Image (cartoon, rainbow, N blue to C red):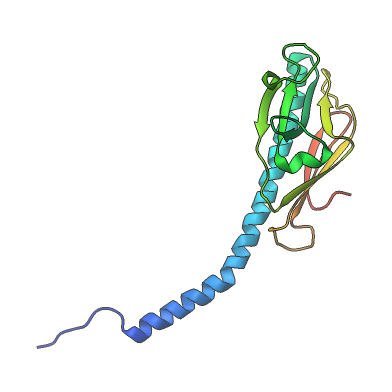
Length: 172
C-alpha cells in the first residue's frame, strides 16, 4: 500500500513564516513612505482644486471669490491652513462672511502635514479671474520618503494673473 502525504512539515512552515516576517519588516517602512508621498500629492491636488474652483466661480459669478483657511467654519489666519480650507463668496451681498457664503470646504490635513503660505492669509480671485496678489503654499508631509530631501514637499503657486501651478519639491 503506497500512501502519499500532503501538506507542510513544521520545519517548512517555520521557514515560510520567517521569510514572510523578514519581507514585512523590510517592506513596511517603504510602504509607509510611499503612502506619505501619495498623501502629500493628494493634499496638494486638493488645494489646487480649491484654488481653481474659486477662480472659475469668480469668473462665472462676476464677483469676488476667496479661498481661506478654515477655522471652525469661518476664515482663519495664515497659520491655520493645516486645519483645512474653504471657498466662499458674498452670496447674500451683506459684505460680511456668513456660513451660507461657503461654496465648498475641505477637511483638515493629516497630523503629519503642514502648510506654509506666503503672500497673505487668504487668496481672492476677482471677476476677471485674476488673483489679488501672488501666493506660494508649501505643503510638507513628514511621513513621505523618496529620493531627495524634498520628497515630502509640494509647492503650489498662484500668480497675479490667476494661474495655479503645482510642483513636487520645495518652493523656490
